[in-house]
Image (tube, rainbow, N blue to C red):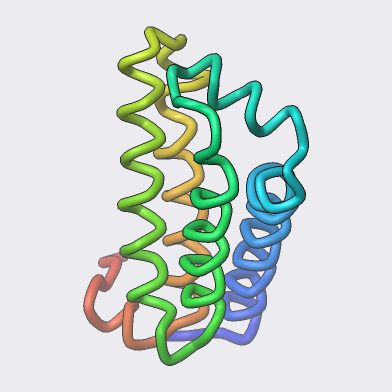
Length: 128
């Protein structure tokens, strides 16, 4: 069962997720901002990977935002977030603020998609 308010809430969550990813992660990497390289270097990544990771993030985000490919985009974005989580674990980062941040983003992303996509709600119904 879908309500217009639920669909619009899903669209809002999706929009917020997209804006966050674009502003906080993708743009700094694609614009070769020093903060992107410095952050990756602090996590143990060799120089030169920021731009490629930014392109992969952008591709996943675009797939997520297109209704026909949204589930594929969400699955690929979760794979990317899983890699980010593994990097944070390897770097010895704090659990709740850094390691689990990928989980928080993933829940936000999937929640928005679940609310706006009736196919996903049919596949994963919530009994109430």
